[in-house]
Length: 237
Image (tube, rainbow, N blue to C red; front, side, top):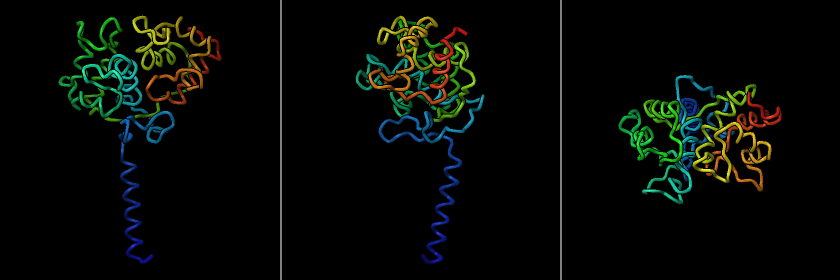
């Protein structure tokens, strides 16, 4: 290899390394548009979460996947009113990056009448969840992810309840009992844990319906939190 070619190769290699190190958004997959930065995939591992930021893969996509992109609504098979919300790319069709007030997705989520989404009798998003969506959009609606989980914390009130609320309750609540399972209360979560279905579903065990259904597998850290909570007696702590 002559000196000129060697110099070109070095330049390309260094340039690529710089571009990669400065890249903060998680690239979407070519077919699904899903983020590639959680559950052990490249992009978020070791990247600390900023308390001032809301992340698509960690917060927004799980909320939409469990409450909007479900059977009968906006999954690929049902595509109610022609709307599919199963990927970042599809979700962005209804989002104006940097402007939540003019984003169709945000406007239907915050409505308080019968035209809100998810539609009654499904539970509306909480005030905190609506605020997270608003903040994510106003921060640029990035396809981003980070590591924020701590396996030292596996209490129900501070860890398990949050996981259930953001990633499971959209399909498992009194108005939408997916598989006949209610994960909107401690009693329901404990009952599922005692049967072994809760843990089996989140580790995608064979013979058990993988959860979140149609979504991204929970990060290893959150699965560990659930396992530790169950092993400690599934307490309401």
